[in-house]
Image (tube, rainbow, N blue to C red; front, top):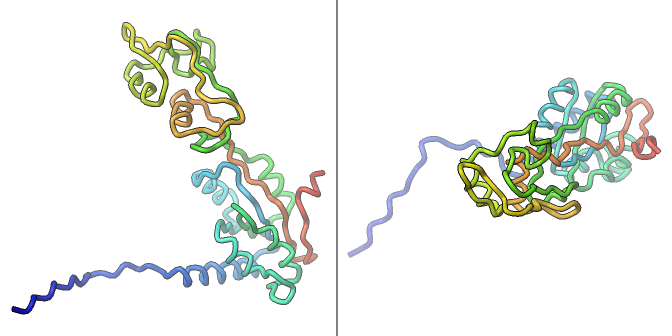
Length: 236
């Protein structure tokens, strides 16, 4: 007896997914359009990338255009050689498109953009694998909400409901008469060492924000002069 064919499921709606190649072509075209519309192009990197803070940068510079990621596509749009550069000397800027970097297209004065980024920084909680800039130790005795970061008279004991949470993150705590206690001091992290997931979680529990979101411009190209200026060289 012949086998019956498995019924074929036909979706009633199509998901509009742009193929990867088309995505790259779209980005390429948008970058070139922005080059035509703006006078200055910055290459920048980001320390401790956070989308919420990058969104704030986009809002503050809403008259500019920001592209992040896909460095090969960005470099190709600028031009990687004098023979294929979109504008004269843009290939000299594209060599800075390595690593976790982006492009900012703007018509604001370069000095204004540099001053903005120099003043813009946001503290945030460190993530796993980040290198800790501090050694953080929670003293023995009653555990306080900031882990000893402020004087006890200005702090409050940790809520007893958090005891199982911090113990799960590796702190050898115990509950005594409704208070979270440590029999001996506990080193959460050490300066210069990478954080694991539990250490990062404990820092957040104690409200210790050790990561700093910073945008670092490395170089920029100006349409008026067709020249690339290296930011580090300016600051020295």
